[in-house]
Amino acid sequence: MSALTVRPFRREDRDQLTALVNAHAAAVVPGATASVNTVLGSLERRPEEYITDPWVAERATLVAERDGRIVAAAHLLRYREDPEVGPDYRGTGQVSWLLHYPEAGGTEAAGAAAGGDAGGGHAGDLLASACLARLTRWRVRARYADGALPVPGVYGIPAPWPHVRATLERAGFVPTGGTEILLIAPVAALPAPAVAPLPGYTLHRTLGELGTTRLTARTDGTDTAFVELDTTLDRPERRARSGGTADIADLELPDDAVPGLLPWLLGEARRWLELCGVDRVLAYADPEESADIAALSAHGFTELTRTERGWEHRPA
Image (cartoon, rainbow, N blue to C red):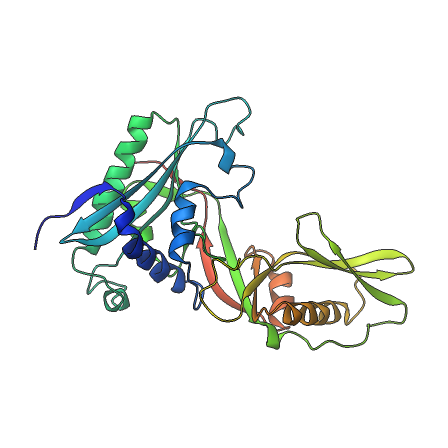
């Protein structure tokens, strides 16, 4: 077996890189995949990040190769130092994602079946060192890391990636941004569409402030609650499975909501999602939002995973 080599990504690596990305994505969100074109496009720009992506001055993708096989890869960003760049990003560098197959026989033995080999963990460490060296050459003022892939629901360092978490920790990264819970529901598990909870309630569909579809409950001419649905997560060129994924971008209920308001609103969301050809929906919550989590869990949602955000390089 030849030695590991870390080098810049080449276009002929695209199929192996996509396989590595999809192996990690599918461990977080069931059946999640990205096309080769989607993965390649994300290395050049992330149009959905319409605020922060224009701030990027330089991008680099590195791979770790052994015997012609890509066993690890990472994508790096350097943000400009211009005044128009947000202060939290100005002059910083980020490991946008770092992926590697788990070490065979380790805590994620299942990863070996997905293509991991005995050098996977070492490949991750070697690649992390190369990433830090690149960030040093870029002379960034701070170093951050994330695991945001071009797949809905995959960001931060999710719990199904203990091998990636361990690699980042050995490299000196620590989570500073808190934990977020990712929930999922089959659309068919949401409450069935039903009559309004009280006479006088009507539903209105508009384009919401987030650029998503807003369903608003209104009574006596006053907006009382709304849910915003993002049904554009799976763009046609990205979709590699039947059906589709949406998410709840925002959900607002009054403190004194009448009984039945939430299931009615979710039932109307189900009606719309079914018309959109969506078969599952994601939602997000902070661990301290126990009441919100309980309410969603009572209406078809289950916890899918937890992810830690805001990784920063703070070597001991």
